[in-house]
Amino acid sequence: MKTFYKTIVLSDIHLGIKASKAKEVVHFLKNHKCETLILNGDIIDGWQLRKNGKWKKQHSNFFKHIIGLTSKKKCKIIYIRGNHDDFLEEIMPFKLGNFSIRKFYIHYGVSKKYFVTHGDIFDNITTKLKWIAKLGDVGYTFLLWLNHHYNAYREKRRLPYYSLSQVIKAKVKSAVSFISDYETELVKVAKARKCHGVICGHIHQPAIKEINGIEYLNSGDWVESLTALVEDTEGNWKIIYYQDWLDKHMLEKKQKETTPLASIHDLLPQGVTINQ
Image (cartoon, rainbow, N blue to C red; front, side, top):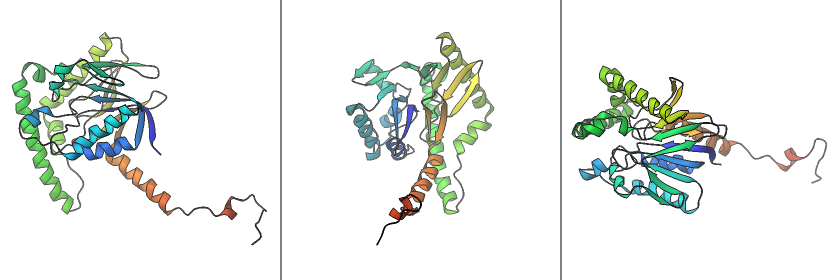
């Protein structure tokens, strides 16, 4: 049985780089369904594909699944342009059936209105100093490479996953300050547009919190965090971590496989028997 949500938000999948968890995100989507799927930017990493990125079969499988959803009209799909897939600017605005590509989107939840943006337009570095952003992208790519080999070493010793980039971002004072400023600016925009909240991505930091009376929701990423932001039928939001969901999913599957089927005698009302 697929789990149903009113809305699922995914961002920063970065298809085209080695560290992208395309296989995992497709597996997640195959086990969930929704009315609206929001792909909130940096789904494709055009920056890396222009350099030394590689497009793999699992990256194509992601779009095969998305096309399958649109062709069967199973849900509405909104693709928001990010900074790494800025090449989409050339064809925007684009709409085909229940699939559209936009700069931003106003999402009407059960009882609240949300301003949806990837978030890069409120990042002075990516908008005004693009060369610095690309230099930072090289550094981040190197960190992911280093992280991969370091965690391969840890896995051999049965140690848990350890994110070098997340730890560095958490410890660097300027990065912490940048994230705080980023969140505050997005909240201001949502308030100016008379929305109850803002939904974004971009900084690879999943979060649900309230800032100055406005809901701030960040869907995280599918490079390290592997997170989805989901809204249930009552309008409640939560972050799903893929690994936590997978562990629970596999446990439930195992329990179903090991639970014996009830015999016909167990299903009969008390006192009723069948003559052999």
